[in-house]
Amino acid sequence: MTKRSYIPVNKNGLPEMFEFPFGNLTYILGIDYLISEDIFTVDLKTAAGEPIVLGERLVANQPLWSDFTDSRIPSVTVVPMNEADPNEDITFETFGDTVQLFIDDVGPDGG
Image (cartoon, rainbow, N blue to C red):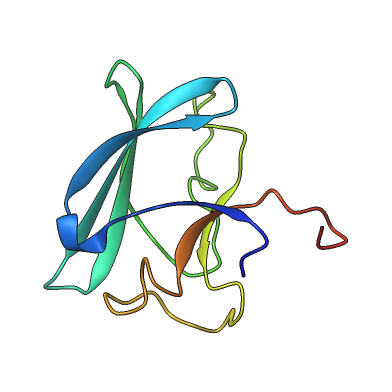
């Protein structure tokens, strides 16, 4: 059972774009899989479709958008990871199964 909330992704339906609320703002997320490189990428856009960050590679245990300073980026921390096994890599087999886009909404005490 997961402790954190996560953003559900249907890897078999990629590429996909969908609206997702972070706090009181809604964003558009685009998820894609580059089969030739075996990597997943994410696009972040405003609700109006204006690009904020395009093509960010998902890296296990590294928060999305942490290298960017755009004030439109959600203040919520999103981390691709496996809660039970932090050493697991992101592959087509694991993403959406054991590896999820978790929202870091768990306090320091784990609850």
